[in-house]
Image (cartoon, rainbow, N blue to C red; front, side, top):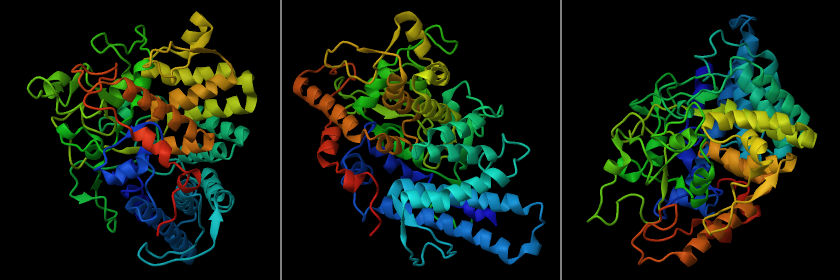
Length: 518
């Protein structure tokens, strides 16, 4: 019975191809105008007619309907299921329903609570509930039931694509964090962190590849199968295997992808600004930048292999002047969820799983919760968890900066305009700013968290303004006649103006939450 409910997670607008469109909003992503599906979210020109918005709403409610159907069948046939199994089945169905409602609440800001079991093709109606009402009446009750009754699987390593006590714990922490109920959020996050079955993996690539799936960092992931003939657009047969085209959409155009979502200048500079730790055990002198950057984005002068050749071999010149990639203002491409590490070109139907929750995210949410709850008293503990993520990333830790300089650098402030690097004293507020403007964007870019974060922090306009100011400065100082790549970003042809357009179009009332589909 539960197979169909889990299968909804594989829908294109939930974990598959179309989810990348939502990555576009904020300060981390760029796109081209001809990719209208993605570009509409980058520059805030979407409305209720947008196909992703319609699919997101329909697919999430289809998951809710399927959860309701499982619960209704259990209630209608109580004797058909052994009593010892029943609580775990109910808990999984309620976890998934609570998860789908969480996304409804945080994407649309409102939704309908329903016990209907109709398919997505049938109409349903009801009273629209506010985000808080959805949390109080649906999300928290379902997740709490799952937390209290879900049966842990014997082999967590294999079953991280299923609802577990850890996944319910993480989601409860996240709901309370979003509600600004800091002590409750911190308690749930700490419980998960204390579970020894969850650990950061040594190589961040393991979170975005198909070579170490269901690893100890994963808390909840959705499984896909490479080359599966049944693409994840029709889930009427949940027993079949499904693939995803997420990688093809994200990968560079000349590697068999579309580069429909690309790193912005802001994200590119942020990766450049985060200094590598040459004493870190993961440091490789042949690749003189962080392991996190190596696994997240590719830039023109990067070292190492890219689709089984050196990057310079991959870049074909055009009469020795203009490369067919890293031009037209494009300075970087995403590596996450692509096969840059093991294929000659990007695969159309990928089997790379999508991780909705992983431990690094939980570490950073825990650090945020305790800083907001305890203030400066939590600085040392927050640094411990932030630095666990930074140490794995291969960059200088905050403790290194504190012990050597007594301050931390404000890495989110541009130096491309010639401004000196600014530093700030270490306290709760400066660490929160670091989490918001540096650590979470670098660690979690293109994983579906950024817009939720920006909105709940109330800094959407601030980050769009900073990104727009950077583009404006680059435009004022860029000369098309200059044949050399411009600035450390290596801009060629023209400076992109995505952030300026986004800032001009952004309207909190229209764009903070998605409009209901028309």
